[in-house]
Image (cartoon, rainbow, N blue to C red):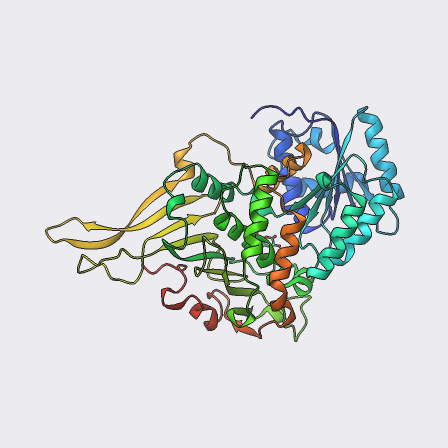
Length: 466
Ligand code: BG6
């Protein structure tokens, strides 16, 4: 990888003692630094309402998150500090930013990472403005962007009052995943797939993101957000966007945002009777969860894209916590051949193109083939591409690493636009207004019975039957 030629940066991370900073942001920044991808001159200022103690104590906290394996730690750690701030008072933080900038000379940029609950976002944006922290800044906003259409609009109005659109980076980390970008490569770098990528050849699409983990101590987040807002109106619809969009004029911010916005405009507003909410058994016993909580930890739904390309093709989306396995799988089901020519081929499962969007990404096609032997017997077989094997020696970049880097470079291609966010809320609003009753499911299962039946006779591809 080419060494960084980025100008000096001050990075301000709100929520610096939180779960995201610990699991993703600090390890990601450390990895970028180790690989020479951070600017030569940079400072990281963690911030939040409560101080974790001295700068030294904060660095120890970061060190535990990063778990550095060799002697590089000190060079990174010496650039990290902490400064408390709140929506009401950002003066000390602003002073710390200015002091860090003075150490680095002229032309210092700022990257502000705002990972706060939707109710706190507007206050924080106004605080940045009041303390001149909106100048020379790229603002990375974490989802959820509001909690419904009305609150998303209010947030967008404030953001655009304070920042120029080119300063805003609404992050959906799924778009930073290598395997997700590979959807675009598969579709648009090949002549093979695009001609069949439409309703004439595709009869269903499944976007299935079960998670084996529970809520992992994030009770207050889950109780206030729920899986529909956390995963569906964001990650899963963004995946749908990449699968369903028309060929963009270019793979650049304008091209992708335009086409995603168009495809989201074409999605039919969700029908609550085709949405299943579930809650895993034992969720209410988790620390911090209300005894009578009706928050959903699972969602499955049917969506339609009412445009020329996809008219009539159902898109099934599913995600939830404490399910049978952690997967991120997109399945494209193809129509049967017009004529049944072989006695043994009508087994109900047509050709499927499957994208496994895990870190060990794989793309394969389930086809029917002749089983070797004296009879003309047809059986299912697999044509497969494992990306790690196809490109030995290349280094995968983790989603947050990639997106932090893009935000510093000012590249909005893999971020989401205001228009997309607002449209997604709009089509989700019928469910938010009239949510289906939450149905219990056993931990380690695949969700409530009603969800298993949602995709019709094919069922869900996952778990695969042998
Ligand atoms: C986050 C959600 O955005 O994505 C979590 O808030 C979810 O609830 C996580 O577990 C899944 O991301 P990944 O990259 O671990 O699959």
